[in-house]
Length: 132
Image (cartoon, rainbow, N blue to C red; front, side):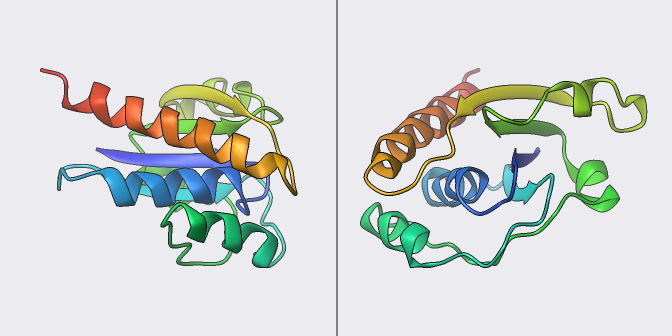
């Protein structure tokens, strides 16, 4: 199964979700990538530093959605509270199963709280994928 985490810019929420999934997932049948509906600016230390505190490695700079990514994905998870689900559910060519987590785009001290929310969502996702 291919899982695509999506947020607005692919700088924080979807990147963190992808990094948590790749860190916590032990099943070689599941793969994760992330993208933004808009390609964001370069990821800076204000995001890398809190990610490192959780043992996460952000491996690439932001990327935008592409036809290839949409075709690749079996499951799309919108990590953001500012990306409408209808972008994916009303497009029959790329219609996939879509989940929405509604994580806020924040900065500064509020990031830790949102990172913990993402970690909890990813942990639950992995648990549900492994359920018989």
